[in-house]
Image (cartoon, rainbow, N blue to C red; front, side):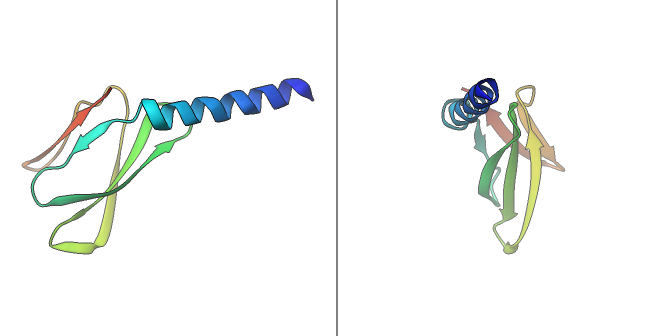
Length: 83
């Protein structure tokens, strides 16, 4: 039982570390608003929730990971910087 407790505490510590220190900086293009960011699982995948400024009732999302340095939607380019 002790090994499972240690694994669980280690996973919780890793998740907390990643949420605080390994968070990406996402810069939206003009006309977009970021509504939230959440980490998916224990890896470096993040879910970015956003809306267009002229339609705040509709929320969309895309996922990024450490290999992502930018995201393009048509002519709009999102800048993603990892610390």
